[in-house]
Length: 248
Ligand SMILES: Nc1ncnc2c1ncn2[C@@H]1O[C@H](COP(=O)(O)OP(=O)(O)OP(=O)(O)O)[C@@H](O)[C@H]1O
Ligand SMILES: [Mg+2]
Image (cartoon, rainbow, N blue to C red; front, side):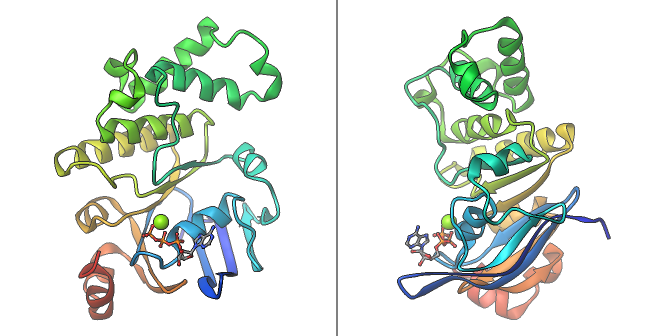
């Protein structure tokens, strides 16, 4: 078994009495593409928020390469190589695609780079290479709001890749994306992950996407993991079929 990159241990979080994490322990292993499935409100996004420093758990801890990161800020965790793509793409919608990439690359270099010229030749090349990687090279000059949702998701992913992460956490990469575009998006994502040797975790509601792409699946229910394993094993579990697959 490959070694874990990220480990969560006994996480607890409640919002107004609702247990969003109720003793969650899990790990992300080097090189895998781990899926998280589960009903709405079961705590999937909350796990991502805890692992990226947006929410502090009431108890429990998160380790990256064995080091405790539970109390670190989102920025400090990002600097350690954990990037995030969001349920709703976090883009500058009125800006061109290439400008979103240039801003992401500038932001990576921190506060001082913001006062330097945004547009350097090297940065433009890096931006173009990332767009090429996710299949958006032809969209480079378009205003981001005019892209189809699948391409907006890919742009959000390219922005996350600007960090050169080792680990990418994706919250519903295919949500809001048409059935036609969905597999194109997944192929582009998988290609980019393989090329950059990035380990990833993704929350997903589309079971066809999970069955086709996930190397392992965790099933959430009411703030905890109710099943875990290879896609085939998980999808043949009667309780998972009844509670999750049927309602997803
Ligand atoms: N910041 C917050 N403040 C208050 N309540 C929250 C917050 N984040 C999550 N919750 C609540 O915690 C529970 C779990 O939410 P979470 O967003 O993690 O679910 P989810 O599994 O991602 O759902 P979905 O599939 O709909 O995205 C829900 O009841 C939600 O309303
Ligand atoms: Mg969610």
